[in-house]
Every structure is written in structure tokens, then in C-alpha cells.
Image 1 (cartoon, one colour):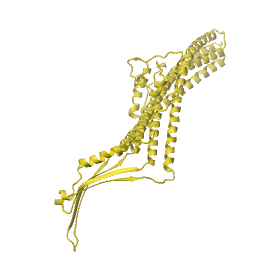
Image 2 (cartoon, rainbow, N blue to C red; image 1 turned 135 degrees about the horizontal axis):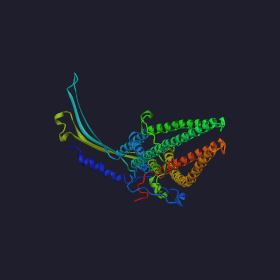
Image 3 (cartoon, rainbow, N blue to C red; image 1 turned 30 degrees about the horizontal axis):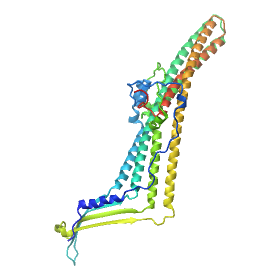
Image 4 (cartoon, one colour; image 1 turned 30 degrees about the vertical axis):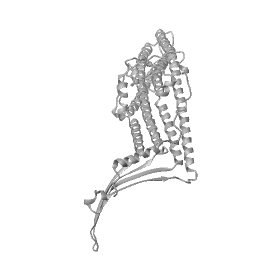
Amino acid sequence: MPHPLPIHRLALILASASALAACAVGPDYRRPEAPPSPAFKEAQGWTPAVPADGMDRGAWWSVFGDAKLDELERRIDISNQNLKSYEAAYRQARALTAQDRASLFPSVDLNGSGSKSKSVSAKTGESYSASLGASWAVDVWGKIRRTVESDKASAQASAADLANARLSAQSELAADYVQLRLADADKALYQRTVDAYARSLRITQNRYTVGVAAKGDVLTAKTQLESAQASLVDLDRQRTAAEHAIAVLVGVAPSELTIAPDPAWSPAPPPTPVVAPSVLLQRRPDIAAAERQMAAANAKIGVAVAGYFPDISLSASGGYGASALSSLFKSSSATWSFGGSLAQTVFDAGATSARVREARAGYDQTVATYRQTVLTAFQQVEDALAAARVYQDEAKVRAQASADADEAEQIALNQYRAGQVDYTTVVTAQATALSARQTLLSIQGARVTNAVSLIEAMGGGWDGVGGK
């Protein structure tokens, strides 16, 4: 008398077949060596400061000590649409990994049916059945495991892409914010210049009134004042462009964001720690993404190599079948089956070999991309360090030049009042002083912007860098 295959016995048969899946073809992943760099050349000869111990080390922009910037940066994760896109791609990659991992396990189906029929010349016919079946594509050669390995690495690369997009958005917002505040400082500078030029115009008008100055002096002073006023108006365009860019980064329409001017804003570079090159490899999200892409490409070689070997699958089922519902679950109605199949491609005109070569070439490409990403990271840090050193030295000279130009401007104006020089000397001194002030402000702004670039080049954040 046949007996149904018990569920636990069915599960045991399928589970024991896992012993067949004892290997995974293809190379195991080992991270290739990155281009070596024992130290940053541009960091020699100067000691960068480290951030305060109480700083939020994740919010790297806190080093600027600007409450408005802090508020804007924290809105990026909530509203930035590019980040939402990368976050969705990461969730998609994780779902794909879970989907392919499910293929490692048997699929179990529960089926039931019943029918009743009758014809004019025959008796009533009935048929009932209930069964539980399982099938399993045995991963003997590791094709599925290599696929899951590739999916997992790709998901990790997607997570790194998300982190890189977040860092880029944060850095771009900080740079735009610096430009906006630099425009505020530039407007304050030009407003002081306009006020000074207005006083100079009154002086020339008074001198012209008493007959000790030519009308040309008045016209020159007036032209100079009007040019400064025009430049002051043009700064509004630069400021609004930066404000609009910030609005898009925080995920709102430009019309919905207004940042109040801050004429007192004083650009100053924050203390910036410098990481070792070996630490940089662990911190840069783009390097992490490139390394995970290598791991994914390496696993795909195993997937392709598995094509040389046969596909093996097992199936089993147990259940009941009867012509009457009342006798469906009697032992005499029990049925079971167990079987397996093997499929091997005998001839494919070299398609499998071509897929293996394609996978190996894809891996070689990711290795080259990884190494180039590392080299680019080293370059970006070296460039930012060099710029920091140059800007720091230049700022000292520019500050002195600006102070000297201010003094020369005042001397020229006093000499003009005393009738010792013509107004052309005053105009030249004023133009030189304005240029020196603008250059000094630009250098100060460049130092802050370069600090943002250096932080981004180092991978952002302060955790594990300097301090305690």
C-alpha cells in the first residue's frame, strides 16, 4: 500500500542534496593593490589644526560655525531629489540581492483540485486531489551564490554612491553658501566704497564751486561713483544666483527660499585635519563604490564560468488523489514522487567562453577604474593642500597690500584737499585701494571654498581624523 511522502522526509531529501553544492567556480575576490602613497607631499612643512572635541563629527560643516549653513545642510537628506533617487537605487539593489538569494532555497507549492462531471450515457464522475510539491535548482557550481555575491557587492556600491551623492550635495551647498555670503561681504565693501566716493564727489563739487577745481574733476568723481553704484547693483545678480542654487539643493523652488543678508559675515577658513593616504582609501565613498564594483565584477566571472557545467535540479511531491471527496485523505489514496534532472549544453559555438572573457574584461576594467579613482583622490587632496598653503601665504601679503593702499588713498585725498595734487592722483589711489580690498576679500573667500574642497576630497566628516 503506498504511503504519502511525509513532509519532514521530503524536506530531509531536499536538504541533503545541499551537500552537492560544495564549491563555487570562479576566482575568490581579493582586493587589488591601490597605487601607493606613503604621505601627502603638500602636507609637509605645515601642521593643520584639529577640530574641537565637542564638535558633531558627522556634520563636517559645523567647523564654519554658521547656524544658517547648519540648518540648510540638514535639509539636504530630507528634500534633495538627487539623494532620493540614489536612495531608491540602493533599495532596489538590496531587493535584487534578496530576490536572487531566494533562489538558493527550494520552492514549495501547495495544490488542490476537485471536479465533478456527468454525461447522458455515463455515470457521474468525480476527481479530487491535494498535494505538496517542492523543486530546487541545486547550486552545485556556485552560480547562484556568485550571483548573490555580485548583487551584494553592487548593493554596497550603491550605498557608497548614495554617500558620495550626499557628500557632493553637502559640499556644493557649502560652496554656494560661501559665494552667497561673499556677495554679502562684497556688497558691504562696495557700499562703503560708494559712501566714500560720494564724499569725494562732494569735496570736488565744493572745490569747483569756489573755483579751485576743474569741472572735469567733478565729472570724474561722479563717473567713479556711478560705476561703483552699478557694481553694487550687479552683486545682487550674483547673490540671487547662489541663493537659487541653494534652494534647488534643499529641494524647494527658488521662490520659496530667502536667506537674509549678513553684511558682517567674515570669511575665515576652519581648522582642517589632514588624513593619511591609507585612511583616505577608507573614507572616500567614491573609492568605496569603485572597490565594491570590482568585487561585483569578480563574482560575475564565477557566474560565467558556471556555464561550462550542467544545471542540476531536484523535485519531490507528496499528496492524495481520489474519485470521492470522502476517501481523499485515506492511506490508499496517497501518492508521492521524487526525481532529478540534469541539463548540459553540448555546443554553443563558443558563447560560454565569450561570456567568460567578457566577465574577465569587465573585472579588469573595474580594477583600472578603481586605481584611477584612488589616483584622482590623491590628486584632489594634494591640490587642495597646495591651495591652502598658497592662499594662507598670499592672504598675509594681500592684507598688507590692502592696508598700504588704504593709507595711500587717504594721503592722496588729503593732498588733493590741500591743492598739492590733481584729482587724477586721487582716482588712481582710490581705484588701487578698491582693487586691493576686493582681492583680499576674494582670497579670504577662496580659502573658505578651498577648505570645503579639501574636506570633500578627504571624504567628509571628522570621525577618526585628528582630535580624540
